[in-house]
Amino acid sequence: MPISFNLPPAARPGQPADTIDTPSLVLDLDTFARNVERMQAAADHAGVKLRPHAKAHKCPDIALAQVARGAVGICCQKVSEAVPFVRAGIADIHISNEIAGPAKASLLAQLARHARISVCVDDASQIDALAAAAKAAGSRLDVFVEVDVGQNRCGVADAPAVLKLVERIAAHAPLALRGLQAYHGGIQHLRGWAARREAAARTAERTGAVIARLEAAGVRCDVVTGGGSGSVEFDLGSGVYTEIQPGSYVFMDADYGSNDYAGTLRFEHSLFIATMVMSVAAGDRVVLDAGLKSMAVDSGLPWIWADGAASATLDYVAANDEHGIVKPRQAGQAAALPALGSRVMLVPGHCDPTLNLYDEIVGVRGGVVEAVWPVAARGLSR
Image 1 (cartoon, helix red, strand yellow):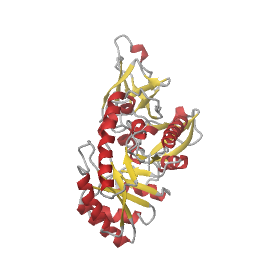
Image 2 (cartoon, one colour):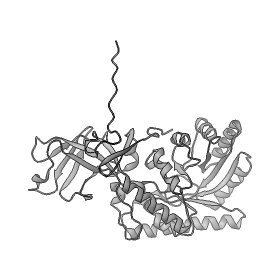
Image 3 (cartoon, one colour):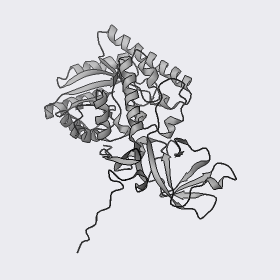
Image 4 (cartoon, helix red, strand yellow):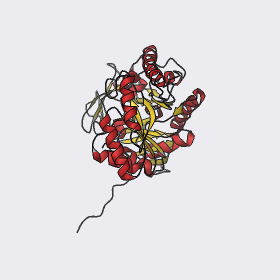
């Protein structure tokens, strides 16, 4: 006879936050709300639309909170990633990436029957495939031509290349040119504030030059979209972008937290991994129950968070599959190590792929679990 047994949830609304099972993703809802408010207020003040990137959180509840505050829609990076957001009622989704293959074009065109969908292109064959899929589905797709403004990844090189694609888009009735995407991801993580400001200025200059060439040719770009959490304060004042795409600002992982923020637009750490000390046998270190299967370390190891700041005495020094090693920062500080069974909060190094490891986010306010939000787009990378 088969055994009927369900895994108990890591948390339920109403329970004390210090009883959440570990490892779990925990969101400080008050801090999260302040981050959402701060970014929207900055965009509103600048007269620039906010289209937050959902690849950072993959959670429809977060997207709905952003739209409720004033965001015009969201970005997704993959077509399948957009599906749960369409189901949740997000009405305007930009795929801030190029796609290849008929299966993805078909899915995109089907989604466009239920929401306003846009996508990037940097090749004529992509345009033809999108048009064929939209015609078959009886839908319309908005198209952004992506310009390489220094990322050295996707995008065409210059205005003449953009014009060729604009002409190709105009030849297909199911497609409409919506504008340009000009995103430089590399500058988001330049540590110095002045270095990011200078790099953002160069990006805006290159983007503006393309816009001017297009306008001289009679092509108007109603939307110029791009920017990220590390460059947003400069993008808002550039006079180039009509729309910005920051994502990680709602959480502020350790990588973004390592940037210098000399300006006024600062965000707070709201996302943590709740862990527990599972071994103290060695004496000079402790072992946590969260390792590589609980966090991404491509942007560095997590910070230990205590009393509202990164710990000055303890470091997470190594991640194994299921274990995390914590040691004192200096000799003679072993007494600062937490006891067996203690709860330790971590700030993940890179929030985006860390979210992809969890089924849910536990929202906490005032020391009590208030909400459990599904990470509904987890694993949707097609």
